Image (cartoon, rainbow, N blue to C red; front, side):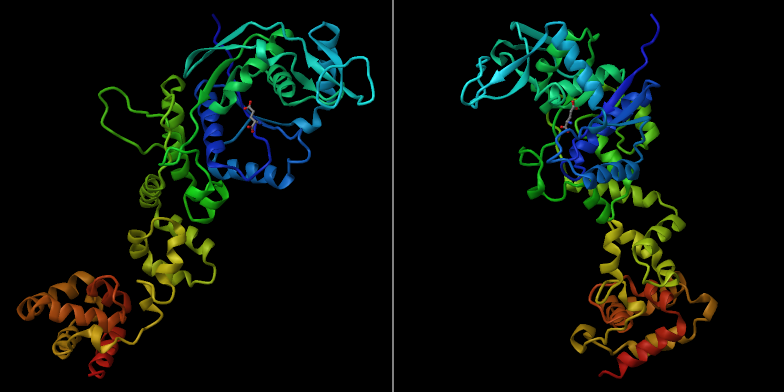
Length: 443
Ligand code: GLU
């Protein structure tokens, strides 16, 4: 049998900012399509003109772009009115749907009357059991009898959601419908319409919703849920993608050492739809931080520097470059940097010298000797390792806390800062000696 050409679709309704859960649905569709050598369609489901907003559509498109999830085709349902109209006619003509007169409580009165409302289009539902195979959940069956003759269009011009989805999935050649498990209850209606239109059946995969650690549905009260927020908070897109891909799915091969860091192409290679779990897709903010730190480590100095200068154009690139190794060790996301180098921050001492308090200095007894030792270190040798070597014996003899603590406070004025050797190198010989002399004068 010739391999089927896989087509998946990500079909968000632009009624809110791009949500992490939605991004994961997009990602799974992308991973599966790419892996199968197929294509991904982005379809904006904006038929609800009251709730759909252009700004949300843009937010979704920008978010996908930022995450690196690209798609092969793009559609907007609001531009496809004629297509839906044709299919409403077709269903009416072949007897699968009918125009029904409604009174105000929605019941069919056909004859009109005082509460006469415009007609709606209903699907002729003969009831019974509708079953489908779900790649993740196996066989799912519904008794559709209770659904009655459900409404599929407001009128001959205006489809409702289920009809538009079915018509699009049919005409766009979709083969696999990968969506959130909240789509399961939509499936029976969509299948009934699909069968009436003679569509060969799609493969379904309903992926588990992302839950907060308290097992409730992930929402704003658990923290950021919008992709834009994570971007603002300085997360790297690669980290977010890796993190989202492994929620509810593990790429662990048999006998393979445990591993969690995967690039997007690696994820494409390893993705396995049938290994997605039925439940237990948990969102952990700490885990995302961990991923972000891991990805930060892989950034080259230049990349990190560029990312930081882009976020902090007011900072001198030279100072950022100087502090880069220290920043790198200390941040979880790019957005942590301003606090770190801003006033009072651990790395603020290069530009802002905070006057050391006497209490913080504890003792200045050994500062003159320290200064004397450092005066002997030549400029080219004024490096953390050499400085440490020169001071070490003296510090050990007098007690490291008595020597190195006051030195660090003298140099930075800060309770928290990097070790004094690193600080001295950063400041340079002249500034280091001047700051020690100043601290001595505070006695
Ligand atoms: N547009 C629907 C939503 O945003 C998804 C439809 C589907 O995937 O079938 O929830």
